[in-house]
Amino acid sequence: MPYKFRDIERRLRKLWFDIVRQKWSHVIFSDWKITFPVPNHWWKDISPWVEKKILEFISKNKQDFDKILDI
Image (tube, rainbow, N blue to C red; front, side):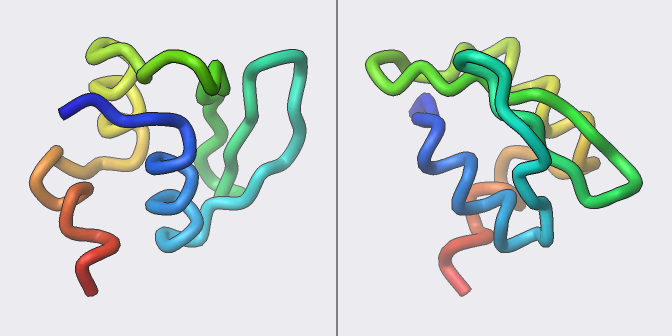
C-alpha cells in the first residue's frame, strides 16, 4: 500500500527525525546525522521509488517501517 506524506511524517517523527525546513512542496527531515527531502503533495501518494530511497536513508526495510506505529 502506498504511503501518504502524513503516514511517512508520523513514522519519521517516531524515529526522532524533525522537520528542518520546507521549500515549496518538499519537506526536509533530519536527525542531525542524516538529512533528506520528502515530497509533500497532499493529493498524491508517495511514489514507490521515493519510498525506497527514504527507507535506504534511514536504513530500514518496509516491514520494519510499517511496524513503527504499531507499538
